[in-house]
Image (cartoon, rainbow, N blue to C red; front, side, top):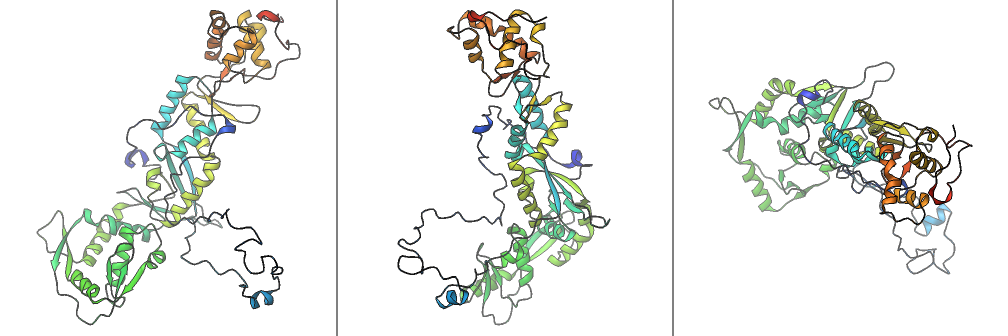
Length: 465
């Protein structure tokens, strides 16, 4: 919805456990998202996978001109046509998917889950890749929201505006799409439908149209109410596809029993009565729609250039252009969650979390601000740990014990004494503990005068003044 009215009108996700997981694996072992929350969008056309088990060229099943002894594959156009080869690939059949709407789509972390994530970061004290945190938000619809913004017009002209339904928060590109939605979905909020018996249609009918998807009989194509019935069924049940695509699922039947069944169905007329004034006379569908459009549609329409909606709602958009724009943006964002990362930066700053970048260019988030400490300014036990971590960044706790005290058991009291300064160093930010348990020292590489290794027996090197 519009950002100015988001807090007042947009419902929030129901309370529940945070879906984000903080036990990440290293970068090289990451797998692509297990599920695409936008994969259920209808109308998505995917390239069929290649058959890897097809017979090789020249083997059994090879086409004309491809097998042994059949000669080379004909290249000349006339020769190809003479031998039965098509001159060009036939055009693809089926309805064409509508182009994506001219909107900019970005993704934002949901506030409640963002607060829970901040609490988990503070409790762990570890540093996590910002890109991984953003990806976890993006993979779960309950954890992110979708911002849709109309693009500006060209040549200094004002850009188009979007329309949102105040009742259900659904978004549309124009008023006509919104009007069709409101009449199909929200007409019952004002009127009560009643079934009244009427005379069956007179005349000779040779066929009726039937929806293959639902089995509904729409009537003869030349019947005066045929188009209205087709439009109503499409809007109420199959709005996830285009109207032309839905028309391809209409068939013609000529059985007398189907024609008689349609006559009996239309002999029952639907009348509309005001909910708050049931004593008034009933209205026809056209009369009820006219009153609803004049008195109630302006109250339901909210126009604007930028709206923020829940991700679950973005999956249910009936506007085909907006659905495709959101889906394609999610595909791009799933490869690199740029917009979520940009939204997390000021949010983490506001929550007193810290971001830092490694030498490789990767950004990490942590609740402890990195604070370099020179080993020469520390006591012997702390300087020993700092010296080793500066020379061997990325080691784990058990490696630290093995290298500083060779042959010492990891669970011995002596090993605990070696690791005792580590907790204080991590809490003060002098040592960074990463999500996978590896350790590193903030700051640049060790200076040239630092020792390259430690003396045998675990003695710490002498600190320079």
